[in-house]
Amino acid sequence: MSTNTNPTGIRLAQSAGIFLSASLSGASVAISAFVIPRLLESPVPLMLRQWFNSFKAGRAFMPGFAVLAAANYFYLAAAIPRKFGGGAGLTGRAYAYLAAGVLSVGIIPYTYAVMMPTNKRLVARVEGVESVEADIGLVAEEGEAARVAEESAWVKGEGSKYLVDRWATLNLGRAIMVAASAVLGIGASV
Image (cartoon, rainbow, N blue to C red; front, side):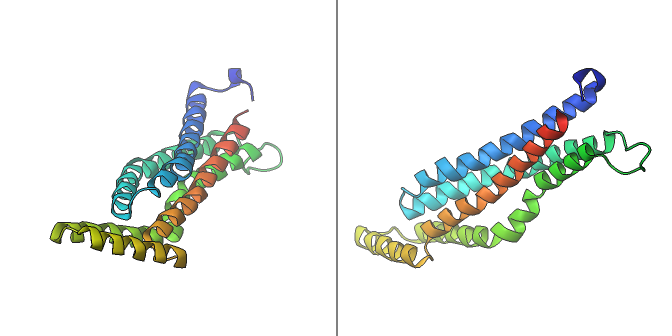
């Protein structure tokens, strides 16, 4: 479809949907590939606080951006002219926009279905660290014992560092979903 045949609203919706879903994908990849590995280098209490602050920041804007991207894609799916002659069904472009919208907003149920158990375990650990630090100050020996116990739990796949690493891996699923959404949006827009 050429630029000359599209109204401005269509182009704005295409640009917004693609920009938002591509940005979400980039942010998710950056968190998993660059931020989390740096957090894993930190002592566990600090790592947990840093993860939680990053988690809260992402939770504040990512779902809203996903919904906005999806709204643009759903608008585009509805705005694309229907097939002529062969019936009143959607065109391939409309289906692509519809799929892009579903993938974009799909990160929300993905988060609840796939990531929530890990999120809950990590948040509980953050609260536990804050509680311990508020009640008592760890002396060096206790801190060393805690570090050894945490490293042992990491090897067994039960420690906080394991959970943060697992969270980063699961987060890549969201990145793939919104990247696919952006690709579909681009493909349908050209």
